Image 1: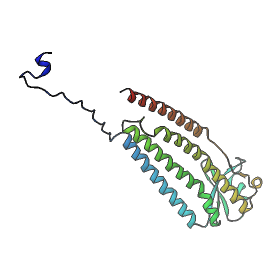
Image 2: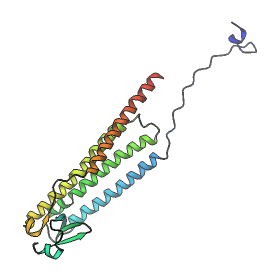
Image 3: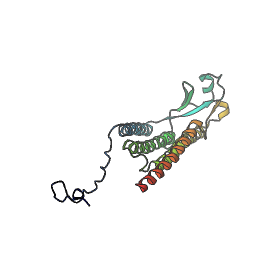
Image 4: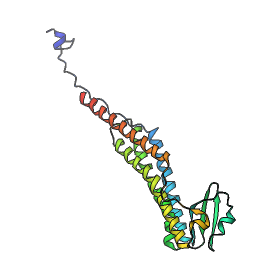
Length: 227
């Protein structure tokens, strides 16, 4: 063994260098984190708007429900001929709403139940999405709980497509029954169950993304085990 291998060039012994551990990655603060913050800001605004609508429903004496006009050739006056006093029909683009001047508190709350549930589901979905965006923004998209959050987000999307519309239909049915309105004479109808294919497609895409993230997570764990 030569002197250079045992000691330094001046004959002094040199201590072996200790292996240095890699620095912990610094969490970035742009991109995903900013987008996550924006998503939560929008969610808070929606929640406040939903709360205001609930307060207005409690404080007012009447309410309105979404209805469909079976005979699109009928004008509003012809449709309102079959409605009782204290009610009228309002048209907003392709939508119609049956407005009742006076309704019990329970029915008024029921008319906004769909909006309340939809708002709460929207906030829940926004929180889940914000957490996924934070994982992506941290530079470690496959080390967190992103797959599970995406699966729950798909469930929330399906619930948002189903439950608010069911509650709106139930509210319309209850208002029709309270006012004694038969659907045929008034040429009005309401829908209890209706699903939009777009929501189903979005939920399916989220489930596929969840599976992809789970696969990436397993690959990341395998790579860490080899290092």
